[in-house]
Length: 101
Image (cartoon, rainbow, N blue to C red; front, side, top):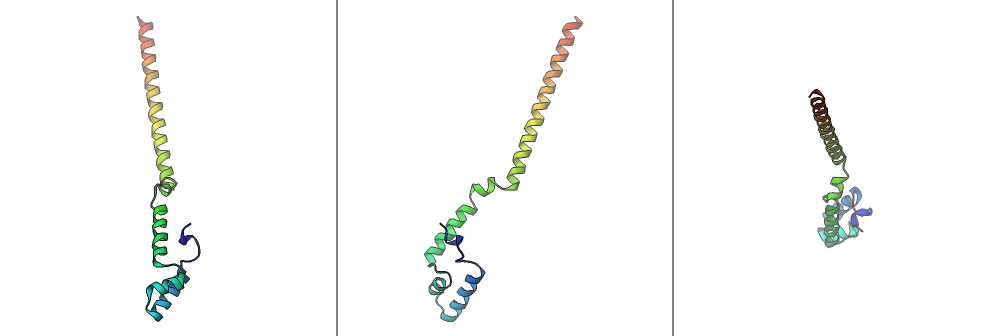
C-alpha cells in the first residue's frame, strides 16, 4: 500500500513540514515529524504513485481511449458495409449479365 494513499501527505502536512524545516533546519527530521515518513519512504511512495499514474491502465480506461475505440469500430463497420454493398452490386450485375444473354 502506498504511503500516499493515507492522509500523510497533502496541504496540511506540507505546511507542517515547511514550518518544522524553517524552525529546525533539518529536512529529514522535518519530513518525519510532518508526515511520519522518512525520505526513503517518501521516495518509495512517490515511485509507486508514478508507476500507477503513468502506467497503461489509466490510458486504456480514459475517455479518450473510449472515443478512439468507438471511432475504430465505426470505421470498421463502415468499411464492412461498403464491401458488402459492392459485393451485392457485383452479384446483381453478374446476374443481370447472365439473364441478358
